[in-house]
Structures are given as structure tokens and as C-alpha cells.
Image (cartoon, rainbow, N blue to C red; front, side, top):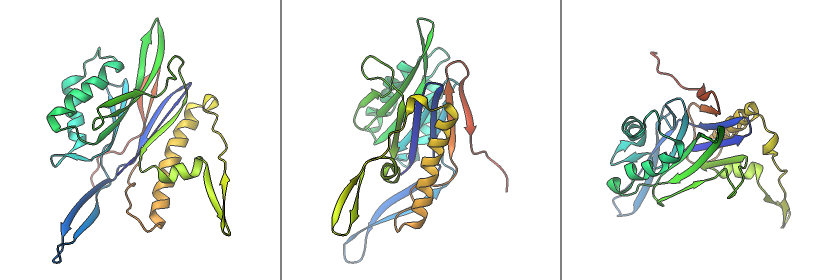
Length: 242
């Protein structure tokens, strides 16, 4: 599992994710009962990708295809399918073509973010793409108008509990606790960076204390995309020698 968060605000777009690779499998014991196992395979897995310093791509869901990490396929996809003049709206069908029928439509999901020049103006595009469901949706438009907001995928329960309506039990009664709204239109790009990293850090620290699988962890990678400057790493883990 993973946690990816994208926030799209007037100044730009942020795409942030953790680096934990969780390996799950099941085996039968000597009584014939199926036992599920889960281990942390790595804390250095790449889930956020900078495409030609123009677009951001984040992956979550199934971590491997036929035993090979999805990150390797994504690097291959970028090298083979993306050219210098590729527009962002051309990428979703390319992702479906590359990952779909050939690999039996794996349960891989993507956030894709960037800008396209239309009538001389940089227009933001943010997509949610599901290979398994054979679908893609542009999530920053209400049909006509550009919208600002945030979207997250993967291990989302903890963040949802923090910023969405919940019910709180007092004695034997449940009371609804309304969440205060987030004013996305007024959030700066720096605030958007802080929000994305806050959501992932809080999830990591909460999982640390709970009796459950630690499915989010490792370093946080954060990419920003701006209309003129393109895609730029704000935080990126690096290879190093111990």
C-alpha cells in the first residue's frame, strides 16, 4: 500500500508520496488454513516521477507486475512513449495502452499532473487514472470550470478521519462532528506542499503506534508543477553510499 496526495491550487500543483514497498503473500499452514503475510520490502521505492521536467506522475496500488516492480515499467513507459512535444492529455490513453491488455489490466492507479497551453494560456490538468478499471478522469474540472482542491489515494483512512466529517461516540450515543472546510482557492503553493507532506507524515506516525500493518513509510518525495517553470523536485531521496 502507499499514500499519494496531489493538491492543485492557483499557483501550481503538488504531487507527494511515501517510499514504502509492502510485499504481501499467502501460504497454507499444516492444517490447510490460508495465512496472509505482509512485510516491508523497501523504504526506498519510487512512486513519484518527473516526466521531462514538465509533468508529474504518481503511482499507487499494485506494486509489481509479474514479479517486477511497477517503477521499472514506468521508467520504460516514459522512455518509449513520451516525446518532447507530448501533451498531457495524450498521456492517459498511452498509459492504458502500455499497461492494459498486455499485462491483463493490473490494479495500478496513477495521478498525472501538468499544464497545457490553450489560446496562449497555461491550463492545469490533473488526472486520476485506473488501469484496472480502464478509466481516467480529469479531476480538476467541474465540466466547464477549473477547480482547485486535493485528492489522495492508497492508505487514505487516517487522513480522511482528520479532515472529513466523522461521528464521535459519547457514552452510548454517536454525534456527528462536522469538519471545517479547506479554502483551496486561497491556498498558496507553499501551503499545498506543507499539506501534502503533513498528510503523509501524519499517516506514517499514526501507523507507527497502531496495531496494524505499517504500509506507509520511508522518505517522502514531493514534486511541484508550475505553469512556466514546469516540474521541479522539492524533496527527493537520493542514492548514497553508507
